[in-house]
Each structure stands twice: as C-alpha cells, then as structure tokens.
Length: 81
Image (cartoon, rainbow, N blue to C red; front, side):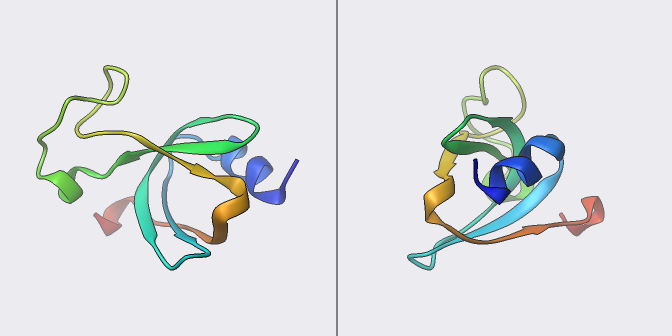
C-alpha cells in the first residue's frame, strides 16, 4: 500500500487538495478509499451546489484519483471553503 492510502483512509470526511503528476489540482472531501483510488466529493463552492450527487450524498459529481498519479496531498482546514 502507498503512504497516501494510509493517510486518506485515516482522514475520510476531511477536505483535501490533491495535485497530480500531470499538474491537475483536485479539491474535495474524501468520501471513500479503495486500494488503488481515493474518491472525492467536490466542495460545494466548486459547482455552486448543483449536480447529481455523490452516491446520494452531497452536491456535485464525485471522482476518483489514482494513488499512482498523486504528486502532493494537502489537508485543508474546514473553514477554507
């Protein structure tokens, strides 16, 4: 397992900023962790509260980020958004 797996698994429900090796930045709340991906729910400010929901929880679409693609992972304070 990667070190990111352990960090994400311990912090489900916390907001994060993930930068991938190709330079993309993903901000969201950790909702689920598998052995290969971390699944984020976008923060409400990202989509203005519109979307189809993330497995029935919260606003917007959810997406997965592969652990192998993560360059940096930063935990954000809740008051950030």
